[in-house]
Image 1 (cartoon, rainbow, N blue to C red):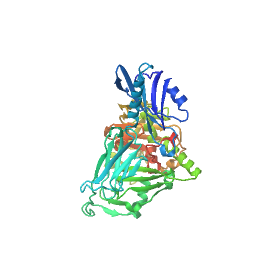
Image 2: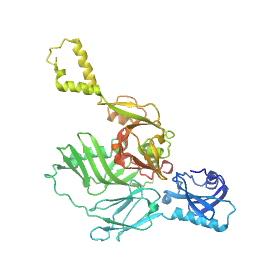
Image 3: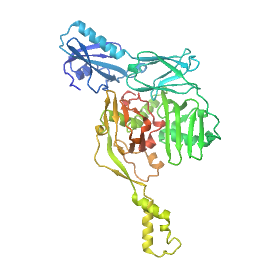
Length: 496
């Protein structure tokens, strides 16, 4: 990116009116002229700016995001467009007018998304369908004629979700700034599966059997989970495939979770939930919509704000946002390479036991043989070791050693083996130690991440990454990252 000119004109779309500042540097203009707002900008256009030609002049267009303090009705991400006019400041009035109109065009052209939802087969409009951006607070419902409007949609890649009882969930990844016409969305009727009690090899078991198990693995076991409650458990169904050792969970409609710890009502459209009892591996996927809970109690509001900050700092969302901006060290993260190697000695000893070689003396033939006793103790200690040894490299990794540029609003992430990630600004929660029976004092939390099938992921400025199933967590995040601590993508600590 070319250096920003110190003396330049720029225009910024701010609440209620336009401002035109001259002969000020960007930082001077923001701090001196906009001191009524706490302006925090996230640079979206990290690559070379988009240039527009106007005669012999060039207009360099950069996009920023405004995260200032606005009235509650306007507290959203307001796009800011700065036009850096690479020309003489003594311009013609017509040129200034043109620049101002261009700024208006870029900043306000796509402030909302509209569309219509119909039945795919009958083409009849569908009312009361839930339309929202996944993992955000931005959502609405379709009217009786099937039409909907989403305001203040912002910029960048995001998942648009439409769900309605009796229909398959509709998902489309969009870039709102590229949508120029109303969307036409056709929902397919959900076909009920045949009764597979026999043909599918599973048994249908209810909440009384699996309810607690589901809550512990879905809501989590952190202290915040204690104040979370599923409001409609009757919509959840369980299928236990005993031969395969697999439990699958389905929901006929969005699961409603009341999170009194963070102050959210979460409507979670569950697409899949599967727990493998053999590998102890849990995989679930869905699309949450957040709604802030209302209260007049200032103490409760402050508690929600504090809890949100506590779960944010050190979270995977915090890490991804830091990585996107290449500021993982400044934000308190330490990242190292970790490799796992097979414990060959454990494999050898296990093979000896399996072959019966180590059975000699178990009937008392070598009861007095001290050499045998020493060997036996050695082998028992070896068998108690993990199947793999972990080797952590001491060198700290920088963000750009695993992250790379994709485009102006997207970063990529690629690495081999594992990343050993330590967050140095907090200590482990004691509940974590108790859950895993770790008899020690709390230390800085450590999480391990690995790329499934070595597939790279793409990260957005808000911390969201694609595809979520391509990144596997273990360590602290495997315990702390769940529905009870989930925050919307439009949450920012400075704006809460």
